[in-house]
Length: 144
Image 1 (cartoon, rainbow, N blue to C red):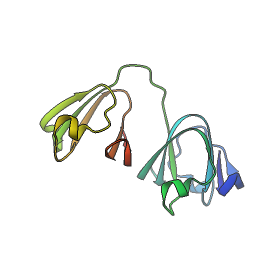
Image 2: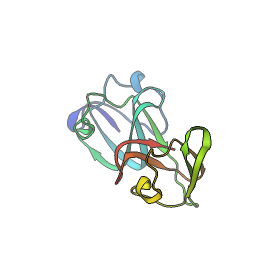
Image 3: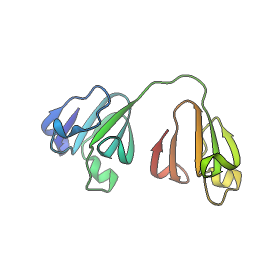
Image 4: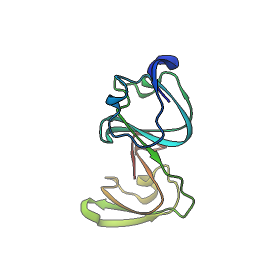
């Protein structure tokens, strides 16, 4: 449930699935409740811009959490998944260079694999993955 104002006030809109453009439902969004599941919210329409991961809970002033003046403009529900997780990460663009296969969480793969430049391309084979641009699950994130 999305609310135009902080603390779950103002006009509200209930969303039960993916929405590429929330502007036809609300002018702005300053608070929301995630009733079930996990979601990715985006600060631009069509699932673009910065991505933010949220799970079940109440977020009365999420903009303070983001440290931003942007509000949610699109959202995508992350489907439940109970299988194996597998992904290949490459040190160069276009699946070139050294490759490492991952099947679990890693709080700092640059240290684990001694990659100084980080991951420049990846191929998700199984599951859903969140990438962070800083160690220890910090910084900007991307959903794959």
